[in-house]
Image (cartoon, rainbow, N blue to C red; front, side):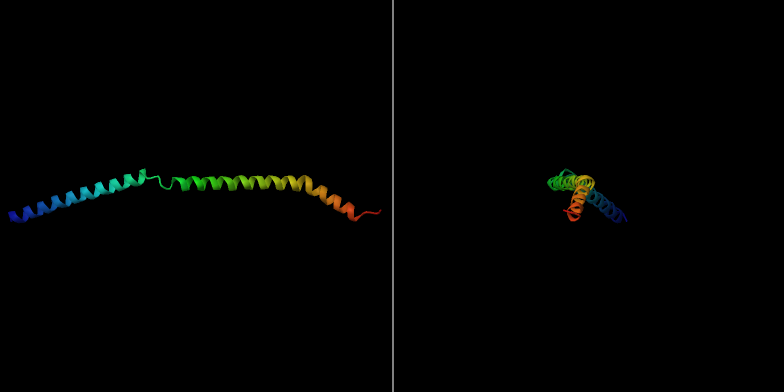
Length: 87
């Protein structure tokens, strides 16, 4: 009976040591992942591309408003005058 208790105690100690080692490994891997900044350049490029797309859309929208508000009516009027030339 004493032998059985010693075996159970030994097994419990071994399991606790294994769990502690596994927890340490997980902690070290997590620390390594958190300090890893390999993808930082990719993130910077993605943000730059996104900002460029937004600024391009704003510029195109502004140009469309300028053209449709001032240039297009003037061109339309001049074309109508050309075709209605009574000369």
